[in-house]
Amino acid sequence: MPKTIAKKITAVAVVTPKPSVEVITPPKPFKRPAILPASVYQFKPPDCDGAIYVIISNAEINGVVKPYELFINSKDVSHQQWVQALTRIISAVFRMGNSEMIAKELSEVFDPRGGFFVPPMREGDKGIFLPSIVAGIGHCIEIHLSELKK
Image (cartoon, rainbow, N blue to C red; front, top):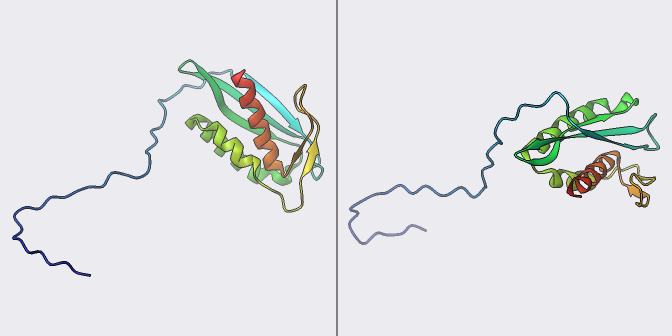
């Protein structure tokens, strides 16, 4: 519905709205050392030819040790394409600093064919039901993050 302006217009100003989304600035460049400490996690889905190995390496950046990159390996090559893509994306998210978010999101992925049980990955833990291979990768990240907090 149009509005009528009763007074004479004497000035005009351009107002720019503030962005409603938080802008994330990339971290300062980090030169990757030749050697990084890493942890290896293993689980065996029933529909794979071999076990899935999740390797997470850490880097100390600004005095804080945090995950830096992730590799996934298996002798079953039927998952090669999405595993390679997921590896690159997770490593990029690690470098941006939101590791907890990626672990939570991956842990909630379900396989329409059903999940599987895995034995404990750490001493003192109980076995766990994993709803998918992707959730298993997320579970490995969760374990790794909890170990870093100790």
